[in-house]
Amino acid sequence: MAEFVVFIFIIIFVSSVTACDRCVHRSKAAFFYNDSPLSSGACGYGSLALNLNRGFLAAGVSKLYNDGAGCGACFQIRCKDNYLCSKAGTKVILTDLNTNNKNDFVLSNRAFKAMANPGKDLDVEKLGITDVEYKRIPCDYIGQNLAIRVDESSHNPGYLAIKILYQGGQTEIVAIDVAQVGSPNWTFMSRNHGIVWDTSKAPNGPLQFRFVVTSGYDGKNIWAKNVLPADWKPGVIYDTKVQITDIAQEACSPCDDTQWK
Image (cartoon, rainbow, N blue to C red):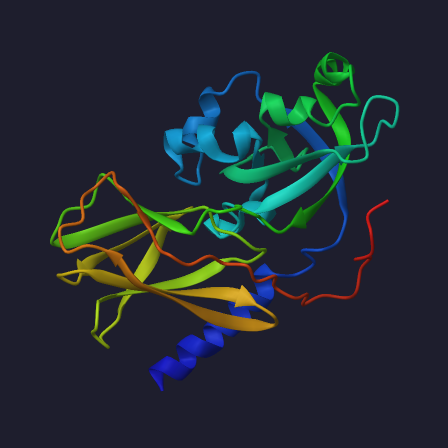
């Protein structure tokens, strides 16, 4: 019965986090004048953020941050000034929470200027804040698997905290379980914050992981069969040997999902 309740909860949660992902939204965007805030973002990437997506990063408002489930999501953003800005805009990864509800995004300086037409980047930068339209897009880490970084707060055995890196597709991870390799006894992990998941009951031995992600209109299990060695160490990044390519479907009224013109 408990498993059934959890399953129902996940389906409801999946429906809530995937609503209207493909729609074009309109808001404003500002930018960080330097990179220091990017290494202390609410998602928990730390200094790893500076190496993601060539530094094309963003802080999003609470509806995009979504209690941390939106961390790692990819967005295409373009400004509305056709003279200064290109139709391609900029593509960013969400790595932080923006607490200023006057604009949906605060971009890295590099990402903000990348919205410009050739030769107009400094003019775009002078805007400081500008009207934009944006939509979520799939993340594509070519040649890169989903990875797990064991957080420095972990200690083996016992407490395990992990950071999820290079999450592809257009989904959210809504649950993670961990078990000893070859064991059917799974331990539920909790989202500590952002991309950080933890458990104080980490099994001994080499570890496997099971991710529940939004996929289609339901959830989907992705099984990473042998990820952490028995002697796993804090601060090390481990390859899961799997990648997420799913695109979650809409749970809202239809919107324009044709080519963005």
